[in-house]
Image (cartoon, rainbow, N blue to C red):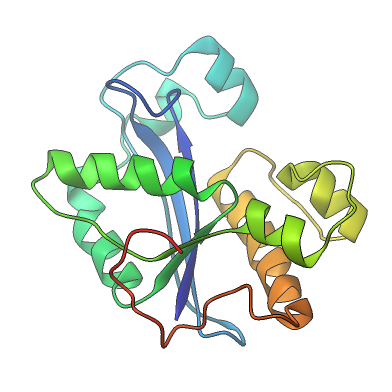
Length: 181
């Protein structure tokens, strides 16, 4: 199993920054079999730059659940799965940070679709999600929103699986709880 994940946040990974939105698609290597998506109340103001980039405002997250209220669902849906994201260190690092604050150890094997794309689909001028999706004709609706970016990453990941002739992408039977591939 794989879990394709995207988060939106109040800033960079360092410091007290928080997640404002999360989307997770559980994938069996053929298709999406489960999903989870929610806005999250970061318990702090969303900086103007981030508001402008994501369109997520303080008002939108005011009544959203706290991360602590959905942590069990994140642990459940990612259990036994390889964690996949576009620039995985960012998304994984944020979720790991939030779960560590709650006292959980969060270890999953990870796959970065940026690195995998460079190996499996070489020659693109940019591997940013937006530009790569445009050049591969992958629809990207809701850019800089967790559900839109994660859904596009699912399509990219399926394309990577299909074109992975040299086994760059670990299959789910590999060790799950080591930190990176």
